[in-house]
Length: 299
Length: 45
Image (tube, rainbow over all chains, first blue to last red; front, side, top):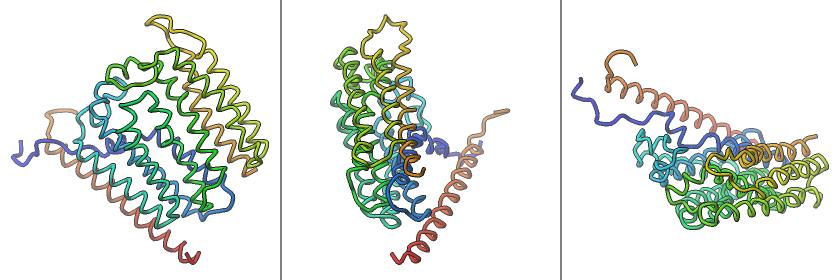
């Protein structure tokens, strides 16, 4: 063995990529792109690409900072134990520097290349996720998902502002739709992974308030989502393609949340099928709703 | 991996892979900044 062999191996580039939560990023890119395409007006393709790239890189930076801060928590949960930091494949300083680097670079390029208003909202969304949600709310309140969900609601707003240069009612409504979609989406997940959250002391609603309260909250948010998702159509901001899609999709969402709201877990061996079905549909819901928004604008 | 595990080889392999990825990212970044500059100049912004 060579005498110059270092004590620890450097992290693989794939681990840095994993730190950006690529699956979450795909939803961020999609909703950001939809905001950009649905906005009135036009943007040069190079600047549009830059805006989406900055949204994605900013989200990746925030995700890296989230994983840097939560490494100990992640190590205690089966779902997250194999992430680069808890698995010991990367040192925390590299993860922190990577997260800060991506975040700063994304905001600067967005500001210099596209718009400083869009860059400001991007900066707020990164701080919101990495500090307000990850450090402050998540370990303290069972309403962490409700307020922290705002972080995931920023991409369409940023995409819209990148084109128009101003904040109007329509992008705020898109923000609100994702804001109200997030709690039922995450609580459906938390219902079937709640033992993991309880183990690491994260006060998720099912852990603190119990399953019954969580199921009731899922129903309340699903009910709110129905008129809220149709509001862009009702105020004349979109056409019928979006409006009818929103009503059908939100009706299905509400329909799937009903069996979740009015059932009780049948012992430890309960497969939690309605909860898993609602969680799966909630991802499809957001993709379909924003795809309808773009289709409505382009057709 | 076949045979004896050689940490120095693995170290160099990872460093090389990271350098390659970083090189591609920096090259892409330079092209992007160049493209943004051209577009901005054309738009007069």
